[in-house]
Image (tube, rainbow over all chains, first blue to last red; front, side):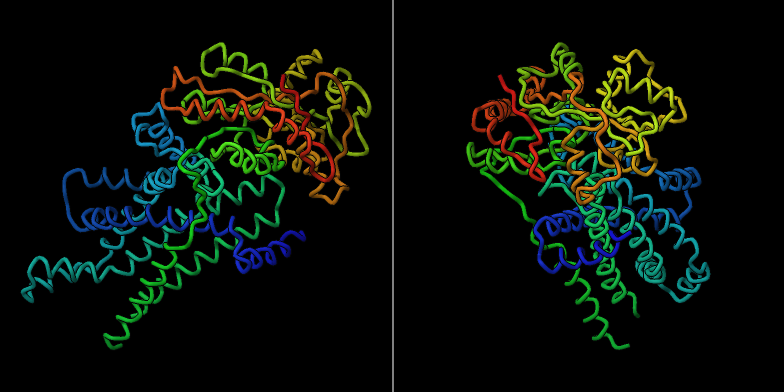
Length: 228
Length: 281
């Protein structure tokens, strides 16, 4: 199992020597996951809030649908997006196949249910008394919304981080929609898959460590936000 | 906690995140002339395309991008008009493909050969025998045989060898393992299970290099005429797929069969060994 020790050394060498292939893959991973997370959070947080906070007919069915979508396999999402963005697909003219944007669409389908479902759960668990208290204190609707959002900020943050972890580590969508094209759509995870299939286990292991380091950077940044 | 510290913290976190977004992407641009190739894992895994692509760009000014997948998927990508040109190795499937109108102008580029590899102790006793003798021997011995099982060019070749040896495809036999993975992953599985497998010689040389020239699996059957592995280049049919860059695709195909590229292919070495034999007409 010497490839593990070799891999650890290799990870530091790649990062410190500024290896251009590694940094290209890191940049692709960061760019594509940022795009998909931005869209997922922008849609998922309000959607989750509405789902957890309000009552409307068909709410249960929506909730079951969202929860079921948590189980979507990434390869399946990859195939689904491919069917739409392939040249012969309905969105073929947009030229999204083999691009980071195309991958981001798939990753948004992956992340959106996670953000929505976890936000909805966080809002549901919020103290019901809060609303009553706030109204009795004379808070208007905007104030009520703001305070409620503030109360569930940790839940929302956790939802975002969970979705981010899933998005950053998925292989199926990136491989199918992105095509693992060098310098273009090769992300850290598809590079790991490639190196492993080439039998370069140490290199694959090193890239895995690089991915964990990106995750660490993101989580440390977020923990600054959380410490309040 | 006072508000100022809080603000600073938030600011630092946002700046750190923004800085990550601005990481330099090492994107190569060559004046917008970009050609997309779908090819097989063997041309990529051996490093042949990394070696040819910059020389092609130097000669023609066209940037070559490729996605390396099994031959089955490469053909499908061409059929769906998602790539411009194909470099694949499944002659029988390619002929049907051209007949169906998906591909045009198919030309031979080069070949390497397949070999049957297995453990040194050779439980089925196939060393030095022909394919027509070796495969039935493996079947009789019930020795582990690891198959790609992924509809790749190598897999199609293996299936044709079984039928050529007058044997049924041992699809459900317990000793017949179908991995559904790439060539090197499949060789590694064969090594773990001490089984036989069919591989192209290029990938085997690469595998051998990974093990410092002393790999657990050795070449047992080689040189049989049915083991030749022919690679061809083919354009995606521009009449079916108006969006493909057929001029660039033709430039690439012409370049591959030109004397210069053919010599480059002949000169390509891995571990001091020639991997591909150019044979364009």
